[in-house]
Length: 545
Image 1: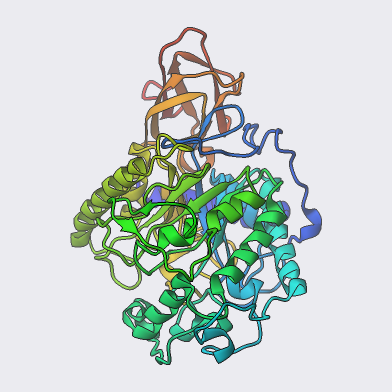
Image 2: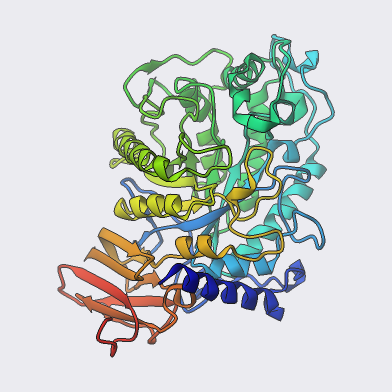
C-alpha cells in the first residue's frame, strides 16, 4: 500500500475508535467484565490460562501449544507510579486503552510497577539508619495499607486487560535507580551513594550511568551491604505482588528488575541467592556471592509465592552486549528477557537513513548473542534452556527501524513488547516512543508497522514465520503436534492491512474460522507431517491473492 493510502486508512481507523461510545476514553472501572480463562477472546480467538516455559525457546499454554506474545509496554514513571482508571488524570488507563491494544492484535502488556510506589517510606536518601554498614535490620519503611492500595490499582488494570484477553507481565521498572539521578524506581530511603552527590543531566539521562553516585547506589543494593537490608525489603515487596496475583491466569509472570546495571557477576546472586550452590555466568566464570547477600534469592521467593507463573530475568544493561551474562539457574518457568535498542540513534531514538544499516547489523549481533546465551543457560528444570522474550524495543518514530526489529523477531519466532503505549512524560525517554497520543489516538504509521499478522498459538512446533506489512503477505510453517484439539490461532489485522479482505491458503490443516475473521483458526489434518499457511491481501477470488 502506498504511504499516503496507508495514512488515510489508519487515520480513519483511529478516528472511528476514538468516536465509538464503547471506546470512550473516560470509560471507568465499573464497566470491567473479566473473561473466563477458557472463553474466546475478541474475534473468537482461544487464548487464555497459565503459560509455562518448560525448557527451550518457546512458551506454552495448558494445551501444549506454542504461544507467541506481541504487545506493548505501559509504564508510568511519576506519582502514583502506576496506570489505572482515573478520569482526567495523566495516568488514566481505561477500557478504551485495553480495547485498542487488543484491536491491534496485541496479546500482552508489560505493565510497569515501581518499588517507590509500593514502599515509599519516609526517610531521605543516604539515611544513616539505612545506609551505614552493619548487621541487617528492618528499616521500618513498609506500610501495608499503602502497598495494598497500590496493588488494588494494579489489579484494576490487570482486570481491564484480562477482560479483552490480553496477558499482563508485571514489570518492576527502574531507570538510573531513582529520581535524584534523573530516573525512577527505588524509593528515596533505599538510595545509598556513599556520600557521593548526583549531577543529573536531563538533556541526556543516560550520562547518569557514568556517575560514581549512581554506581554506588546500584552496588550497595546488589551487594546488599547496607544495614537496611535492601534486598530483603525488595523481596518482601515482590512476594506481596506475586501472592496477590498468583492465581490469576491472565498474569503471565513477573519481570524482576528492569535493566539492572551492575555487572553480570552480581545478578546470579541476586536472582538465586548465595545458598543456591555453585553459580556461574553464561561464559562459565564462577560467581562468589558476598556474605551480605540473602541466602535465598528473589527467583525462589517468587516461585514459592506463584509457582504457576513465569519469571522474567534480564541481563545487565550496562555490560557489553557480547559479554557473558546470567548463566544456568536451575528453576522452572524462567524466561530470558532482554531489550534491543540501537546505540547509533539520536536522543529521540530516531536513526538517520545512513544509520539504519548500522542498527540492523547491531540487532543481528545482539540477537545471535542472546540466542546463544539462552541455550547455554540449560538446567535440569529447563533442559533446553529458558525461553526468551524481547521485553523492549522501538522508542522511535522510525517505521523502518521498527520494521527491522519485528522482521528479525519473526525470523527467530521471538515474542516482543514495543516501547511504549504512551509517552506519559517519560523522564528517561522521549515523545518519539509513543504508539498512542495522550488522548488515545493511534499514530498511523506505527500502528501499521506493529499490527502484524502473526501466530498467537501454534498447535505444533513452528519452523518459520514471516510478515510483509507492505503487501500483507504472511507465511507460517509448523510441524503438527498433540494439543488436545486446541487450534492454531493467527491474528489477522483486517482493518489495517486487509481492507479488501484476505485469502488463506493452507496445506496440512483446515481453516475453521469464518471468512475474513480477525482470528484465523486452523485444525490440523490427522497424519499431516507439515502445515503451511499463506495469507495474502484480497479475496480468494482475486487473481492476485
